[in-house]
Structures are given as structure tokens and as C-alpha cells.
Length: 67
Image (cartoon, rainbow, N blue to C red; front, side, top):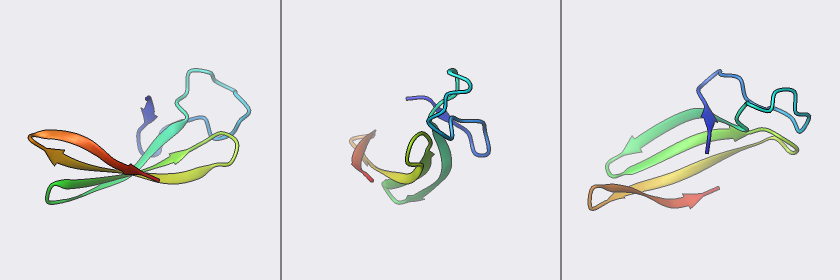
């Protein structure tokens, strides 16, 4: 999954102006112990925000949930 950096160009709407742009853009990340929350925005029809929650298990980051 391609993701643009904070403030970077990404596909904001469902009207494709540049097919090479990612549909996701990184917003922020917060770590508390062995848990990591990554907030992102998703362009396209119905712009929205979401969060991936990860935790480290045996030295490997694993997806816990996505909203």
C-alpha cells in the first residue's frame, strides 16, 4: 500500500488527475509501550480518516485493528 507523507500530494477525490498518486496520506503516529497507532487520511469518494493499531509480538509488528 502506497502512502504519501504528511502534507504530501495524494489522490484527494475520486476524480483521477494523476494516476501515480497514492490514495492514502500519513497524518501521525503515537507509540505507547508495545503498541503503535498510525492515523491516516484516505482520499477518493467519501474522504475519511482512519487508524491502524499495531502491537509488537516476538519482535514483529502485527496489525491489531483498523478503523
